[in-house]
Image (cartoon, rainbow, N blue to C red):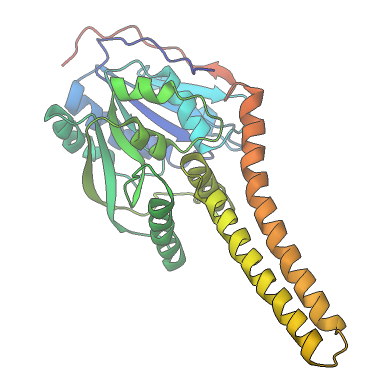
Length: 326
């Protein structure tokens, strides 16, 4: 099932897509920096798509107020919480611009870098992704786990996903259309963009600390995102299960030979402890292998349903196509 995408409007040079969840404290500050960056680059030929992922605070009210002040700021209200990646997917489906700028609402990724990304795209890039040089305001645990996650992902996937990157990037219309043609439910956007190919270039930058509020990616969600990334782009866990089963079989064969040797050469009474230890060890290994297969089977099941990725409750009014483009 292909995902719908808004038709290209050549008078809109830039679409900005921002997923929002409980960001009422941030949105005004975000727009105060983002709007000047957009206007400096393309005049009034832009649209800012703020996707409210069923926030539990006043995020939607703040978005509607921003739309009333500036009709180029468009709100998309999802019917329920779908998560960051599907919220981003929904926003991308509404993008009409020639180029699409993706960033989060928390101002950790500076919107002013749009100009540098734009220049790289003018020079021939189809994707310009922000690659973190430093990460301010994050715990040591978060930095260490992020570092090893990207390196583990690189070793396990057949698609080369740049290290130390998020969804912060500028993409061309061709890349956006290729991305939206991918129908999977479990989405890892940065990996999907990498899979699309085209000419992709990095822009090194220093990531700021969150402007306000709390992170929307606690450990539990980071683990889920990691599972989505690995299972979407790699079958190596299945191969690992096969390798474990192979070496376990060798070990079991050797243990059997040793048991027969002891039985023949010594007068021994089989011990309950050793028997239970062997049973528990092999049971644990079997459950581990079955869990890996179950994870992939569950994802096949979810994909086979072909449900819509998201449901939109409301969209704020769009302004007529601007005539005073830069």
